[in-house]
Length: 390
Image (tube, rainbow, N blue to C red):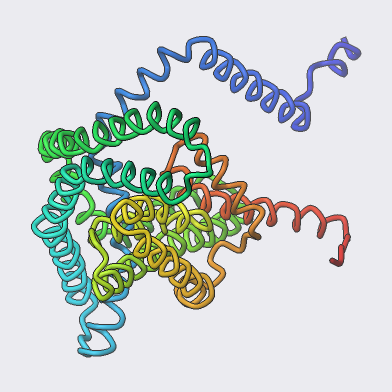
């Protein structure tokens, strides 16, 4: 009996922890296998949940974008300039001013800029036959002025290619207006979700301190203190990198688009608004953006006047130098901390997965991943007492 008592089962925390981790890994592995095996059903379910939660997700995104503007008004305008002492008053005033500014910008955009863009696009469609005739006239002049050169083969290629190119451009341009119209209708259908999203974003910004407090309470309640402090600091730094790039690049691209419009208007270049809008939007993509934006503008102006097309190329080159050497560093600083190689890598991978949006969002996401990877590597090296010099 004595031996039986001595050989009874005794608890062991070490083996118990190993068992828990093993079960957890098996559970996670089973879930991943299940997700992969029934991916179509999972993606459909996720899409349904995403659609249901879309007003809240959009509201959170709107609040994320407006929050820096609200903080700026709160600190610079109402606290420092107007000397308002009540934090509650400055919060609601900065919230109201931020939304009034954003709504005002959207009103200007929809009431002035978009109709002008549609008008420019319509004029461009109507000018396609004229451009087509000019190309043929240019080629005929070449053949007349240089009779020794055999243009037969070139003419055959162009006779086959030009009608197709012209028809493709005309179809694309003609379909663009119905596309804008159908998009407008879909926006109207989304109006209820947008209204809900705006209301959600207002409540989020109004109660952001409470939301942050509850988030911190949750993290501190369920995770170790050492992990929580590091996690909150890392999350703050990632937010600074991501939002700093998006807001800074948006301001930078807006300024470049406005400067392009002013210069094109001064030099009396045709279609300044639509070309400047393309330049401003594509400038959101680092490195490649200015060149991508220059291609359609150069092509349009080339059909009207080769000299103006050349002037536009020079203008874009000057703008790109101004942006790269002065404006970009002034606004963005080194917000990403990425070397050019990694920026090009992020643009390439992001573009392959999500098109133009991926090319833009790929850079800040890569910057966040690079920061996290650097933190982990530094921690591992520090634990091993290793220092590596460049």
